[in-house]
Length: 210
Image (cartoon, rainbow, N blue to C red):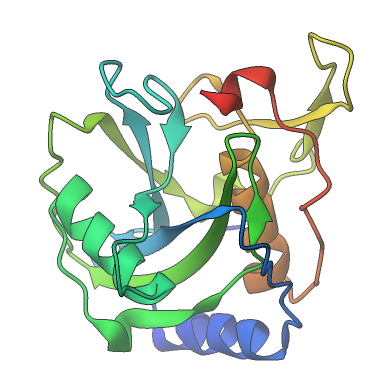
């Protein structure tokens, strides 16, 4: 199924997020971060896509891993401000608060963060200028690639923990893992199908600590 960037899709996502009883994490020992699930399309006729990045390998934290635009909250920021700022800094796309459609569940990561996913609408024709210091490659993944029975796929944890949630997307061509894969899975479930599927307990790989 193709998802085209139109008012009907936007309204459906806003409605699904508005009725989703999201989980919030208030543990003060965890560092706060936000990520943006950026929805756009190359043109009015193109299917809707979502932005995924491959982080630059030289980065101290999560270098060489697949990610959504985002990062740690600056002093005095809220999660929406942080997600929009990081989107501008990482991929060169300025979005304002009216572009925000809603929030998904907070997720605790193995690296000691609580991530809040912010769903934003970039519209058709949005252009990106990734910061090479942070982003090795930017992918625009059609939503239809998320909407397949093979997602989620659970793979064994190499150190014997709980199975790790993963996904293989044709546009990227490599396997990605939770937490990014888990956030994309919940986006599909909540935003596209109106199902309040939880992902906080899904396994994350050991390398997600770094």
